[in-house]
Length: 323
Ligand code: G3H
Ligand code: 13P
Ligand code: ZN
Image 1 (cartoon, rainbow, N blue to C red):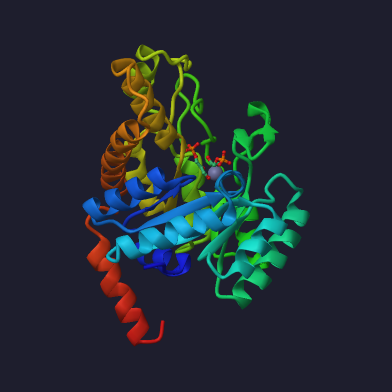
Image 2: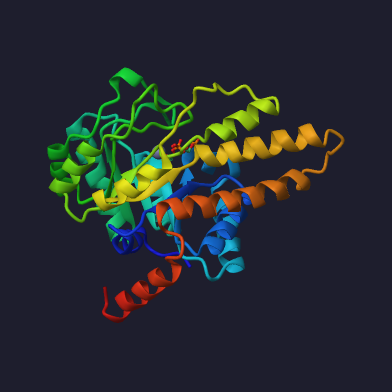
C-alpha cells in the first residue's frame, strides 16, 4: 500500500527512522519488498533521475505496481530522490509519487528558497509532500561535484527560516555525511551538536539524513578478495549512530551505496566461484536473498523493524479522525 510520505514521517518521528532505498531494477525491488515484509517494517522507495533514465519512467513505475500486487501487506511511500525543478514537476504531475525532493542546495539561499517554494506550491496542490535540502553534503550529488573542503554544514537559524518560508515537509540536513563509499577520513563523525541545534529550532519537524550508508569493512574486503579494486580506506556512517540521531529528529535515512556493495559482492563471488555459469538468474537469486537479509539488518538498526502493525493502526486511526 502506497501511503503519503508526510503521514509515514509523522508516525515515525522520534520513535524510529524510515529507511529510504534507491531502486533501479526488478531484483532490487523484489529484495526490498521481501526484506521489509520479513522485517515487518515500513519503508520509502526512492527513484533518482539516473534510475528514471536507466530503466525508464514507465518501467520503474510498473515494477513498483507489480510489487504492490505481490506484497499487499507492505506499507511504503514512493519518493523522487534529488530532483531538479523540472523532474519534480514531472513526478508530481504523474500522480504516482508520494513525495519529491527538490535539491537546490547548490544554489544561494534566496534562490533555494524561491525554487523550493515553487515546488511546494505545485506539490501540495496535488497532495504530494516535499523534501528540500539546505547545506551541502561532500561527495558527488547527481553530477554536481562538491569539493570536500567546501562541503558545509546546515546552519540551524537558516534551517528554521528556510522551513518557515518554503513550507517544505521535511529537510535534508548536512551534518557530516556525504554520498558514496568514501565518507570519512580518520576520526571524522556525524555532527550531533549541529543536529541537536537544528532540532531545537525545528521541534517535531522531520529531518532527513542523506549519505547514510555504513560501507561495511567486511563487504569491501570480500569484494576485493573476489577481484574488486575498492579503496580499503572506504568508510561510512556507524550504524549504531542511527539510534542517537532518531531522538534528534532524523526520521528518514537514505541508503543506496550499501545496496550497491551487496550487489557487487554477490556477483563477484558468484562468478569467481562459478566461472562456468552464464545463467543470470543464479546470481540474481543470490542477490535478492542477500538484499532482503541486508534490509532486515538495516531495519533493525533503524528501529523500523516490527513497526508495520503499529503504522497500520496509526494510519487507520488518522483516517477515522480525518487526520
Ligand atoms: O544520492 C544518490 C543516490 O545514491 C542515487 O544514485 O543518482 O546514481 O541513481 P544515482
Ligand atoms: P549513500 O551513498 O550513503 O548510500 O547515500 C544515498 C543517498 O543519500 C541517496 O539520496
Ligand atoms: Zn542523497
